[in-house]
Length: 459
Image (cartoon, rainbow, N blue to C red):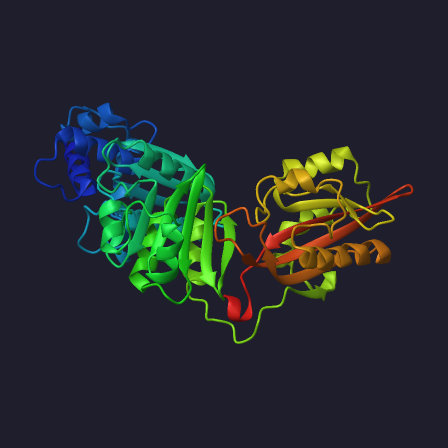
């Protein structure tokens, strides 16, 4: 018959196994904190762990003992780790890796030491979590430095918690290079200071845009802080692979708007991305572009029947699509804005001169920040790029005339307003849904656009 002492001894031995390998100099307080995280039981706090460790609990409750046994049987060691170079590997002999995790039947568990995690490893972790957007299981993240544990019901929430952990770690060794201007080459991301400019043969007080010059001619990627975000410049097919990876790893950790400009076909192809993770993926794609064999068309549109569009491609358009045949009143418009689609939605009203803009989206910035306000009241063709505006107006006119839903996949070259130094044109690839509405004698169309990967020679 087993005595209470036998149970105390067994539990203490199990705690040692669950704690795993301990590096020299680790305090018992740190061990107890790690055990509290790994046991993950509401009744087993730090004080209880300490009492179980020193066998101070005379009669250990059966459910507590059973839970400790189950954690040993579950092999709490991480199933994978992310090393200093950002590679995911099986965890065979690296129990002290700063980033580790396991995928369980009921949840995904991650452990990270923000003070020791290298930025390339964190970038890999962030990309991996972005690949789990449809994952139904909750995600549990343990901060090994502070002993904090957070539970997230979705990958996006988990990403926010991860960013909080990294941001709140003072003196983090993996903190990235910061500055108003930086550049990425095969050695990493570094400040673009006077010394660096002189190495490139550029006078520190040059009177031209040195960041654009370096991106076009020196094979590096420049990163400049502008306003509330970043601007990244590079040249297609002219960047070293390691420079691209260093810049992408840097961007992957930035939760801020990022504009990309890629010099391609003798002009800047510009894109605006909501955060650095998306910008990192697009930078990898756009810097691999080959020069087109023929001049790019101003506007190419492929109209597709709505019944021929896959459910996945239609998913972003569902809020607007669901309003077809109903009233597009203020309540409906407000509902669309509340769903976050106002950044790329245009509303136009039929007039004798052509479709006239009632609302212009604030997302696209190829005509400058003020264009969204200047556009209201104009006919659609009256844009800074008249040729592009006329092509777009034809689509709106067709939707109003046919009174049917219009879905189109578009590739276009849009001339910019010229307010930015060196700006010429940008290449855009997107899908557009145009939905007509009739309000008494008033006819209106609402459209929504979603950027897509550049097809053919463009991505």
